Length: 150
Length: 264
Image (cartoon, rainbow over all chains, first blue to last red; front, side, top):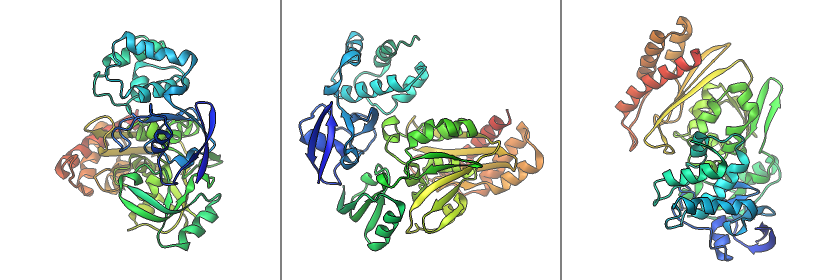
């Protein structure tokens, strides 16, 4: 079946099977920043934004995204791009495999949390696993980006 | 891996139900998160995402929660927070991450009667009802006691408004793992209700502990005794997250902790 997605601001048609998850479709059409890892809905690596809300693309049926706006890390622009610099400044980009999912989740979090605190940031990001950094440096960078002090 | 034969997106619950009973191999698709962990072919997949079941409504004396409401909406609803405090948010905030809670639905977890379901534990303590398309309205507690699954569409969950104070307590091996045990306590005009889930069987009320505490009044000593009664009256089983004996001991502590929290 054919669905229409607005991916990173561009409307396109996608030929899908109704039982396909969004990650498979996006990767098949060349959006390779969308990574696969655990494939069980546990790690957050495959996160994309659907109408600005973060979802696990490995657990979200592509058919449900019909006519919705999808943001992958390629579609980040403006102020949101500076998040990468905060992560690099703290030396926590490491292997980078989890970065697209983490960055998109943080961007959604910044819009959603009205008065962010260290605790609410940690709670929001518990669904994003990273096997390199140990999280402390990432948290430092994200708190700086969110304007939250220790 | 899950594969579909035919697939439809009904625009109403009527249409969804008619499709469900039209074919033996028809299955309803809620969030689709837990389903994907299995390996089967579904003859007719009925996707409920367009059936008008995504809402949280103030219905006067009650609050209605549509079955396709995401766990994240359930968690962050100001309406639910206003009437039931933080216990609803507390009962879902440990479920994987925000990204999964934006997909998983409250109806799917309730309909499936998952033993590990934290929100079921909270809803049972809140004395919630459910509304099935064909079966009509019934108490969640009665629905949970039924063996097997009805061939019906869960439309909504209904919580009566009242002056409820609640507490949700849980213990996990790690932040987002399934609970080893979950306990919810609600205190309102009708008395105290104690629900215990992840035993690892589906949530149940600790009736004797409720009777005891409602006849005595709440203080630390009575809360401890109520925990001991709850530990004795329900069955606690073993799985890879904890033994039955450990869960039984744990229930004493979590029940006491929840009771003392609602007494504040």
